[in-house]
Length: 399
Image (cartoon, rainbow, N blue to C red; front, side):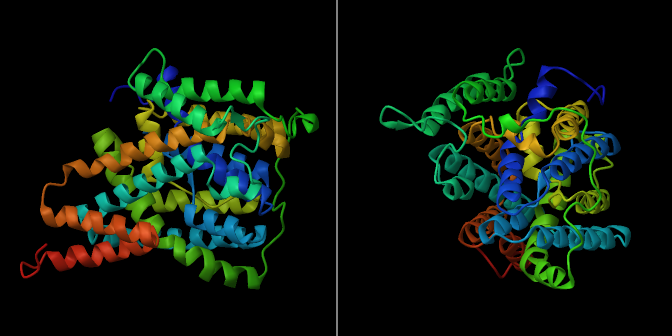
């Protein structure tokens, strides 16, 4: 793969590839649930940098989407979300240190891994389309398709759809362009739109300077918070974390980087996420993980080395340390439809990993996981897929 550290426009473009997943959930958890903006961005930045340096290849950082989506939908308290992150961290540390995750990983067939990747990719694509048409939970909460733009329509067309269609076509044209990388061009265009047409909410309160983080800025969760978090947030998240953030992520990293990704093991990923969640807990941030979708996003938009981790991690650190709790105002300059474009293309990259499945039974398992995921959630799809794949190994069963 060459040098592990490259700093060029492709690495910069690739580093921005997963903003469509990170930013909406981060914004929702701040605005609706009261998490600390500085804690979120500081923990994300540190996680990107440290995990990238340790693993030696491009490494994704994502929010725990089951926790994030449920917490936003139910307006869970910040303390309940912090408790969920701590509980997940303890579980991941346990299965990592005891090597139990390696045993679990051996039980998961390739068809299930591809099914998880297909399902995650499809969910990302669907969410990207929602961002463009204005029907995501975040946009419904604000009752606006583009909450931070001063105009909502161009003639009879919603501005989000106009930006989404034109930006999507531009992305298709530039997707493999090394001189003008699609991810970088799209984000820059988004920022320009935000500067020219944005509401600039929060800019009047900017206090640029050095802001140091507080220890436990939101206080310590109570015993009741931990009980609620265990059953409502942590347990539903675990199968998705194991399936997508550990097993599918490690598989995809091997596919992209070969022998250079030797450290990206099941055990390494679980311990990495455990430590990140402990850090986020103490900073008042959100539960964090790795994820196959994030890796596909970074790779599709040009990331090939640890340089992408240092770039995006550095951006988050600078935003956190120099803007503090006002950092969200800068992030909100990027229109939702721009984030939707990035989700759409990142999701397609991940979903297309299914192309190496040739056996009918394998394809059936992957598609069944997709169907169950769309009807319920990825956690149930993952568990059902493992059971189904094991059953289909018996020649008495056919599809």
